Image (cartoon, rainbow, N blue to C red):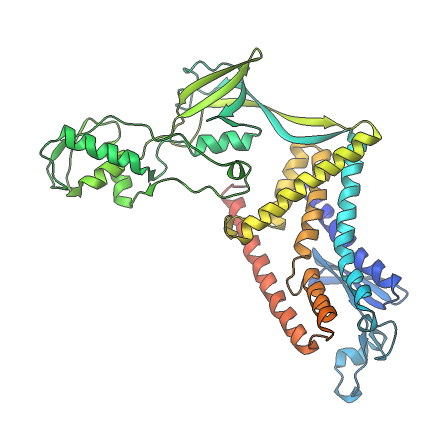
Length: 467
């Protein structure tokens, strides 16, 4: 049911976008012949006719379009059968109702109106949410220790942390969300298939010290003494990674398959007899993939207490059951409603723009991109777990994201049309119509391919339970 609500909300955003184009076209007296909700893929239904415009609903809801009347062909005998049957969709070439006969300024407004409507609608949604629920998320969470798990091996309970402690920092970095705490735990786990170079050097020295006659090439049947397990350096990450705005890159040298198998064999052993020849460097590398100790700061009775050398298990689990509280800011007065709504929109929009830049510059992998399937799933879960306030705010952010993506200077998107219009404005020449159409069609196909690949990412994430 909640997923259905999200589908309807996303469809509403598309409707709002297309209404923007439609209203702007009508203001400048452009003849609109079709208004479609959804993409013309699969079943379609003609809803009604209003003046010159026929309204359609398509089964594939995620899309929309507004079609303008086209100019009549100079050679009627060469005109397509579709145009001959739809004579009400064509106009004389000098008609003031043709989009092509409008000024560049008018065309820019018509093309940009969908994006503008999405932004206006997003602002209205946030203000409505703030006024109706009298609060907005502060984008932070309070995280408390609720209990400990007996099934997960971790030293956190023995460290002195107790029920009711509030997580404040990990490795001196403020923790404002469950994502951040989980990120530290999972990336500090025992065995991550990477070894830090300084630890490899230390283990090499220890191996040579414990085994004075050891050679670089260790023969099968050789038994050597092994140094005690040493911890790696604690995890250090920048703020962008911690906020999920930048992909985390593991520190050190990635282990080979042979080194990983050797690591598992050598773990917690004081001596080992090799059945196959191996290099001393392989042994040192295998011994150097251990764990990254965590330093956790908690708040207890209004006092900050630091616990060092916290170790997670092989799955990056702390073995703690958590109590999580979302933090909200009050919006009870008109001033609070307006100012805090603007601040909320500004903060989330700048985050989205930064994330887009990270994607463009390659700091975030395209494989991490998700689309409408993920939005519907996650949005439905948010509504179910956190209520309609967060569902409405998510819809507002999707509306702004839709505006941003649509305004990118890519042919086949609104931003692409704006780009061609600006080229016409500054050069004084209209781009070749046939060439423009070919470019738009090419990029439209690319966008379809991108959409399919993103849907694949979403489905894969659902199957593997990453969403």
